[in-house]
Image (tube, rainbow, N blue to C red; front, side, top):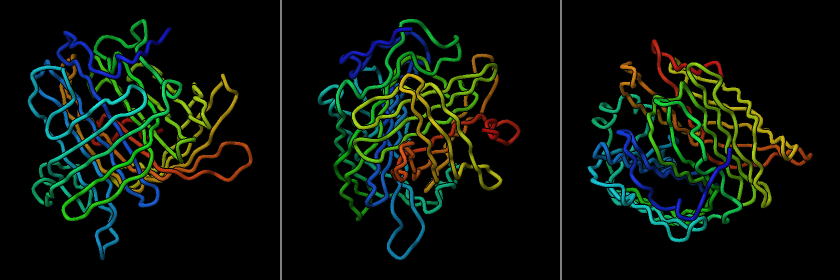
Length: 348
């Protein structure tokens, strides 16, 4: 199966006829010195007349406190077309394909001293304060050789189970500023960006684990495990190591959870490339976690509640060359359908 990725894919695609056609960009970044960062997502669902706009900031504790805070905002602003990713105060600007992208946000964020309150969004928005927020970030990548993914020449998902027609990712560097209320931070760190287009339901996977990590501009990885309700699903990802993109076809993940909600706390695993004949072992500890949810009726008429647990994560990566594990930051994103009050992927 061939995969196409052109410079034109860095821009908007023609709106498809599917009612759930989605074009989205996602990006995260973390400053290792300040141990803070965040992620941003804009998903255009023009055939539904709206976008999905999310800002999530993992903030240091307030002065005099030891609690890590999260600044969060989600909106569904009205849109009429798929011409741009610009709604709800969040704007994406492609400067140079594969090399430079700007993300800016002006608006408000809910500031949560206890981010897990977002398990009940109505109560969280009622009981926590909002602050004004400004974000100005520039992301730079290392060109076409650092890109992973694209659009396959043949469909790779069953009708009704689509999660993206085209999808690619890239590790990036980030510089700029984040301001929340009277606090402002200069950001210098690394992250990962993602662009996808095509029909999407969050209920299509039975569960998934999406792990992203950066040590610096020369080392990072993305590991993916997607489980299907009626099949084995997929495992894969990539490692960027000293200027080489290693395509990986094996991922093994073990998760330690905590509490009655069974949120993930520690992730251990290995990502392997049979082509490169190499493996990288990793351990991740969730530093700050916020649970999000989505509820939708499937094409079969079943109502499913989906939980997406988003955790800023401290990673240790073992290259397997005898050197000490490298330390970095990134995300561990766990999506589960919730059945009888429990996440379906708890065994992995």
